[in-house]
Length: 202
Image 1: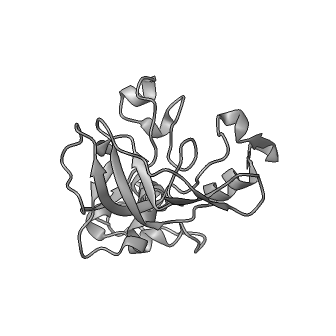
Image 2: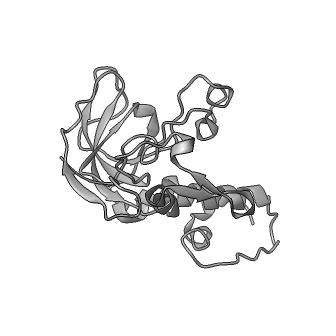
Image 3: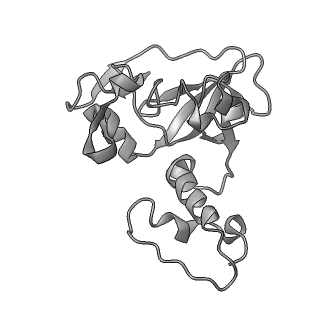
């Protein structure tokens, strides 16, 4: 398979030919149809995040290893399943949840893998979606998407969509209350596109 990889920081991604992974156990191989570009991808490419007071935090200090295939907003089609994978069939359309933990830390044990002490997030700590295929560690990180859903629109749901959804839900708005969303970037526009049934009354 071909993959666009970060080989050197702040340099053009390099197209490399890699062996297509073979799923085993509960793993699922997803043929990628769409992969979003998140600002986190830029941070990983630059090699640092901006910390408190503008202090740079190096990605390598946080466990990121290069070369790396970035991309964590992934929608695609199930291409292969390990012998323990269940609930999905070949050729089904899926959205990939990328915030994968190691499974043993306190956050993972209460179902908050996005806060894992030793994360394995796709596109950040393990190879992600800027490729023809991605190996998802378990079927539990997949969500079926309807045939009527556009892949390009679906891909960012697992990051930008969840971030905006969480902010709106945490606002705990009541019917007839108003809210001002400042900014019309990738996250600021999402609440306008979220289905009303997800947001509840108000």
